[in-house]
Each structure stands twice: as structure tokens, then as C-alpha cells.
Length: 393
Image 1 (cartoon, rainbow, N blue to C red):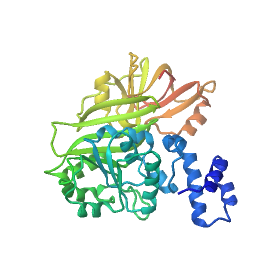
Image 2: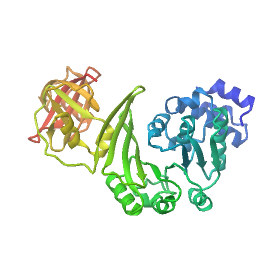
Image 3: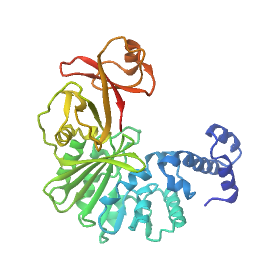
Image 4: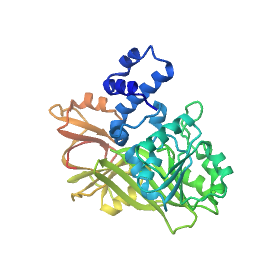
């Protein structure tokens, strides 16, 4: 798949900027030039996103497929949702989820209509010596139509998040493949479906659409929101044939290589009355998955927190909670929103605040720096205040 000359060029130039590489490769045929550039782009972007692929010198796809695929981290954070030992990946793509599943003992069938992309996955599977990894060059719909008797323990579907005009899709009805239309067909194929969905999708809307389309065969078992370094990456929903008493809502943030912050509650969220307070000794900022699900009420209840104001989703307590699912700060002092802070060097965190970070700096004189964090918020009297803190998590 890759010649010795190509590999030598890639190894020699893999840390160079693309503009310089394009000039060096300008005399090569366009297909070969594109392939080499894809490998170098993959190496540069994959060091953080796909370290296994970089370490094992695996092949990378075109940039659009690299952008759309799971990261190695988020793929690992889905593995426990797969039941049994056989997995059908109906939207295989570059195969990060499939590859990690195969490395973890699953027998995997990778379905993908793009033959060139699938060949890359096959080559990588050979290099990783993944023998229980099978390939079908087909669309999801055609595979299910032509393999009606095949049964798998789990099915993974990652529907396209954009249309042919590159517009973001906001409904499962618009995604490709249309998961809602596949649900009746899949009842004969598996008893467990895992959907990897865009983090931009509204959870309430997605749940409503799936419950309507899946009734009476499918029931939502788990909703998992996955964030990495406090950036929301995936909305994952697991459906099963047997209904449970409650839907598990799992809110995860991989805050570092070795630490996952998790919070679990039930869906739909129950509403409790918040307690409000001025800033106390500690300030708590929930991670991105909790913000995505708007699971503020169960967090406050579980950790006995006070809220600063109805629309200010920052919390406070006299207690130091070392295992809080988010960031923890020690409150130093609170100021009214006005000039007089020019001596402070701080990161600014605006929450429910009328002005942007640059406007806040201009008005207060706050300098850029990492000594402190300043939360710009509205208090329970709807007045803008600045809370000066130090991070302790």
C-alpha cells in the first residue's frame, strides 16, 4: 500500500508545514501527492487524537474522514456499551471504533460504501494482526437487506452529521443512514444498538424521536454524554429490546489521560428547588457534559450545593469537594463590576454576563495571566459581580 520511497519521504518531512510539502511534491501525480499529504497530515493531527495509529505507523485517511472519525479516547469510552462478543459497525468509516473493539476481543464486521477508505482500514487491521475483523463494501441499508438472517450481539451506527451542502443536521430524520427507519429492520439483527450522535443534537428531541420510532420494539437504556478536556465530543445513546425501569444518564469528562470525571443520574431529569447564596468558600464549575444535559438539579442535590442565581450555572459551598465532576476553585474575594482590578493577572470566565472577556478587561483593568480566575456572573439580585478565585483541582 505504501512504497519504500513514500515512507522515506513521509518520515523525513512529517513535521514540516503543508505549504512547503505541496511545493516539494508538486511534480508527483495528484493521487500519489494526495496520499502522501494525507499521511503527513494524519501524523501531525493524530499525535493527540489517534496515538495508536501514530505509534504503529498505520495509514491515515483524507482529512475530511480524519476530522469525522472518533478519537482513540472517545472510542475507548464507548467500549463498555457493546454487549456480547460480536459487533456490526454499520457506518464503519475510518474504523477507529471498529479497530478498538477488535483489539478488545470483539469479532467485528465493518460496513462501509467507500472502498478506498475501507482498504485503509483493512491494511491497518493486518498490521495490528486483528484476525476477527471482517469487511463488507456496502451501505448500511443494502447490507441489512441482503443479510437478513445474520445476527450480532451489538450494532454501532454513527449517522452523518451534515447534508450534501455541509449544513449541520438537527434531527435524526435528516441523518444518513436514517436510524429511525432502520429500527424496525434491526429488531431481527440484534438486541442492542449503540448510536454515536453529534453533540449538537438536542437530547430531548433525539430521545423523543427514538422512542416514537422504536416503539414497541426498542427502549432507550443509556444516554451518555462524552467530553474530552471539558469539550463535548459525542452524544451516545444505547437502545435495547428489553425495557428497564429507568434510563441511565451518564455524564463523562475525560479530564486527563488517567482521570475520568463521571456523574450518573436518571433520565428524564427531575426538578428540585435550588438553594441560592452569595459566593461561599468554594466555587464549583460543572464539566461540559453536565452543561450539555443541563443536569444542574441532580448535581446540586448530590453535592449539597448552592446556586449563585437562577440563570447563573455556577455553584458554591463552604465544603471542599475533592471528587466533584468539574473544576473546583477557592474563593479569594468578590468585587462589584467596575474599575480597580488592574493589579490582578487572571483568566476571565463569563457566565450569564452581559459583556465579553475583552469588554470586561477594558472596563476593570484586569491583566492577562494565570495567577487567578475571575468569574464574571450575575448574583441573585441580578447584579453583575466579579469573583476572584484560585484553582485547586
